[in-house]
Image 1 (cartoon, rainbow, N blue to C red):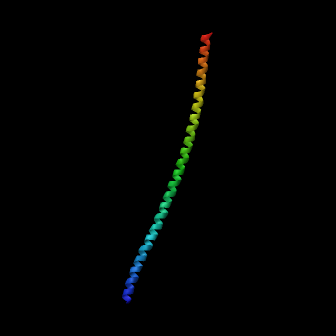
Image 2 (image 1 turned 135 degrees about the vertical axis):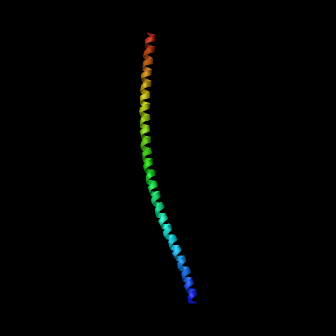
Length: 89
């Protein structure tokens, strides 16, 4: 009977050690993945900030180009009107 108890105790002890090792490995991997995800999140936020700044810069350039194009069109229109006015007189 004592031998049977020892076998059951060993069997149970081995299973408990395996379970404890699995739980420890699970916590380790979870913490490691959490750190990886945190760094990935921070990197993504930084990239999005860079993209936001680049987008704002593109918008500013486009507005400036539009203003320059509008000024050129007005200048061309004035030159055409001057030519038309000169031909009519």
